[in-house]
Length: 193
Image (tube, rainbow, N blue to C red; front, side, top):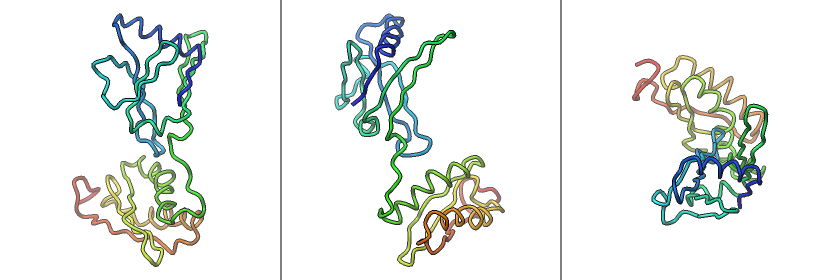
């Protein structure tokens, strides 16, 4: 499931030894799995911190706890440590952490959601916004709802037409169009009220 190089194992054991605590191990957890912002969290984990349903790996004297929801996302993960003159770099990679691009024959809704997650939302997040998919209608219209800084923004129609719709036309030509159902004047933090 997870491979740890010899150099990473020695480095991590050294960190644990420096803590001066018996029965201390590590916990790996997938954060925002399946999303472009996905990352892996590595923390110390004592016996008292382990959950009953944790997967416990024993790798050459190193104990690693993984919560069950993170397990599928960490499949074939690798941990490595590369020394350099300033100390070194610990790297953790998990090939499936950010999800897999849906196949061309995947449902249209799944492919629309993938584009929102990987191309649209990273762009609008820079302005404090997000776009969610409400549905893909029978006539192949993607119904979208804007939130955060996009809700109430005067540029939302430009974002919809020149950004999102253009991206969808290029990547999903079978999609007939997009429609915004956001109540831009309402919400917790609309751009304008």
